[in-house]
Amino acid sequence: MMTAKQYILQKYGRHVRVLPFPTLVKETGVSRQRISVIAKELGIKPQPVNGKVRGGFKYMSREKQLEISRLGGRTSQLKGTGHRFTPTEARKAVMIKMKKKGTHAKTS
View 1 (spheres, helix red, strand yellow):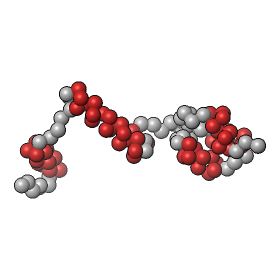
View 2 (view 1 turned 135 degrees about the horizontal axis):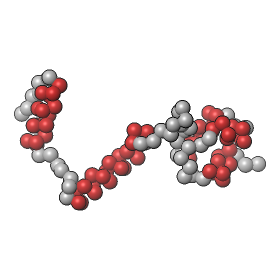
View 3 (view 1 turned 60 degrees about the horizontal axis):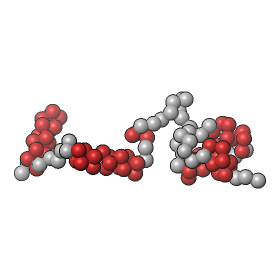
View 4 (view 1 turned 45 degrees about the horizontal axis):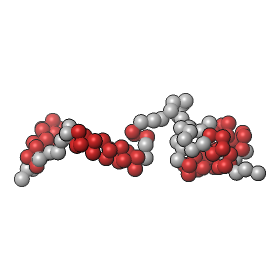
């Protein structure tokens, strides 16, 4: 007999975006919580809330966000469109931000 994990891998593979939990509960006889644990182990997102697929940067793991950010930063530097703030520019930016917030900032 096949385990729930093996069944999910065989039927949907590792690259499926979202698992249909109600269908899997019926087909495998395994609880929703156990399927959720298996999905996390396989790196599959949980079922969408209210029928909407939750995607985008906000819903990615922290590691995935950092990986994408790093690649974007490297690419912009290689293209020559990236920008690194000098200490003077950074101080100016902080002052502008503080003025907008209505607070005072110490600068050295």
